[in-house]
Length: 273
Ligand code: AMP
Image 1 (cartoon, rainbow, N blue to C red):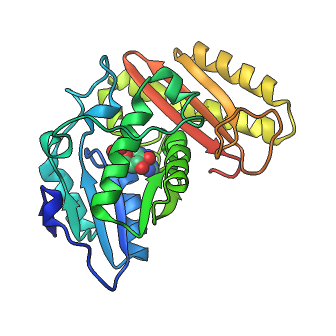
Image 2 (tube, rainbow, N blue to C red):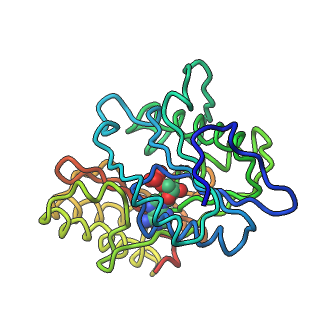
């Protein structure tokens, strides 16, 4: 496995498909599922490991975000990754003069609660796409709005890449895997699984023909009773990220909650297990 620190060290292999999985490291099974999907479909798999400062707000956890490059490289090796691109911040951002910004689909939900976050995401993903030139790129549906934003960027800017969105990998109790789960205390960690349970209840209620608005009201009340501070819970169209009051097969139920100092996001489709 090659470990590259600078864009100049990469030249795209000819005659094979390049699959790309961007990550911020602290790898878990969710990340590894994307790498395995890329491994199954592509001749050459590239993973980036880069904790991207521009997608963190001033009061967010950039400094304390978990970093363990040695272990990450071992895990990449175990799933058969060919190339890891792990640049430092200076290499990626010698200046911060150019920003790639997607409008519309970024405005609600995470965009509203984390101002500037998506500009950081689209800027770094645009840079990484230009550097790696992947044929396919893999993202997790756990970050549903991020998928919608990247899809829009790729369409609007004609990036020659096909996107693959992969279902969320969960802990046995249903909590969506996340590098930030490490911040939860043991008691918070136990409670965190209730987010998935409440979303399932809400989803099942709506799927059984109940009103979407009523299902959301009940979910919010249940989450607050469980001790979460609810940033949002909503039914959305996953392409536009606009709220919907009519349940269609592709609609998804999204939520963001806070538990102590930790922010959790999750979402379910009608057929998500
Ligand atoms: P991150 O390192 O958090 O930036 O995540 C890198 C990629 O892994 C993103 O496309 C995420 O959506 C995806 N990802 C994170 N957690 C999970 C999960 N539990 N299941 C599937 N994909 C995930």
